[in-house]
Image (tube, rainbow, N blue to C red; front, side, top):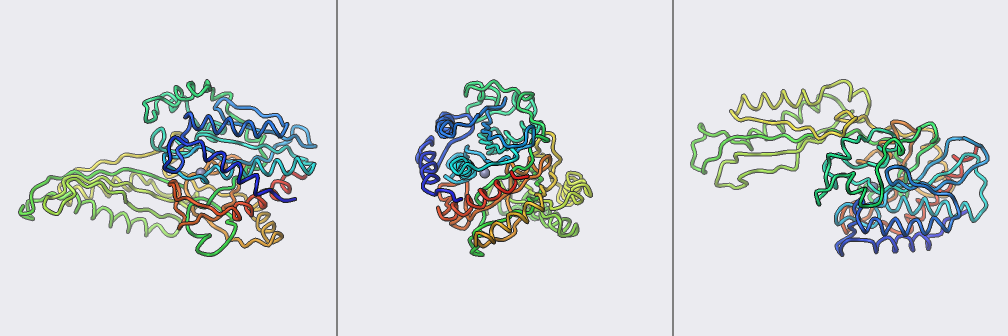
Amino acid sequence: MKISIERIKKDLDSLSQFTADERGITRVAYSKEERQARDYLIEEIRKMNLPYYEDGFSTIFVRKEGRLKNAPCVMTGSHFDTVYHGGRFDGTIGVICAMEVMRVLLENGFENDYPIELILMNAEEGGIFGPSTGVANSRAMMGTLTDWELDNTRNREGKTKREALREYGCEADLTKAKRDPETIKNFIELHIEQGPNLERHNKEIGIVEFLGGIGRYYVRFKGNTGDSTMLMKDRNDALVAASYFSVRLDSVIKEMGDDVTGMMGQLNIIPNSSQFVPEFVEGKIEIRTFTKEIVDKYDYPAIIKSLLKETEEKYGISTELEEIRRINYSNPTYPSIFNEEVTENIRKICEDLGYSYMYMHNGTGHDSMIMADHVDTNMIYIPSRNDGVSHCPEEFTELEDIEKGANVLLHLVMDLSKS
Ligand SMILES: [Zn+2]
């Protein structure tokens, strides 16, 4: 059995039409364009003659029953929403390949033991409703999304998540959206790498072993400005203070060992000039964790606070810490460890099909990260070109790489759905 790259190309080209403007793809959650994409996908699903349904959060599921009754399903899919001026491939390719896998199985009369379900999500991208509001469909499904978030986070038009969903035609019902994790045997997501590694190493398939947990924080430093002749002894330079903090943070994180990384970046400096002393600096800290133990071992906000205190005392400035956290999750979050037996399975499939592969653990937020806490989850990466840029119009993946990824997914779904 083999997937058809022509049909994948057709889906990809068709979905690329649904964008709010010409610069890349803008198809944000609950927008008109996202609705058009959804209508297209549903039309394609109808051709499969399989039952499909929506949960209480506008997530679409398509189900192919198996020989075993009341058995947990093998679920595969991804998201078809994008950021503002994003690319054609992020998320969308996982949706299209999952649909193609289902078509091939149906055409060939494949008999699965466990049910197979497609999942098509429309609100993965964070930032549309403010920081840490993404991966919403999977959070709704796993019961960690809250009504508070629906009523208190707003998009660019000032609409809350609940209001935007209502206009979109969905009355949000988190009780209805919640799904018993026991009903899902495996969750599999095919995704573009969004990084340069596969391209650089000239590999065709990325087998993801785990994704690091993420902690995010804003830190602010407030000093006093003055012109460039201000005597050094009179200064309270916010940038000098922030620099000290950055060096201290670096050394403290290094002391924690190899299971954690962290840094401060994305600086906003006011005034940003060589003629005036900076009076204000805002920076963003990102911490990544690679084991559960390292998350539990340290109180990260407390460590940052104590370094800020030390900086205040040394430079006579004031500081502020703001946590960017996802409700119901620790900050940093635990890493998402994927199922080892299934990564082994993916490796065997790559070898059988003659595809080159490498193990990886780079990447940021995906719905798989949410699912991994509750269900055996795995990800397959395919190469991103142009040095791995994504979330921009230059995001690009070759059709032949998509074809290979889809074939791996096809064989994996077949294997996992047999008892
Ligand atoms: Zn994505």
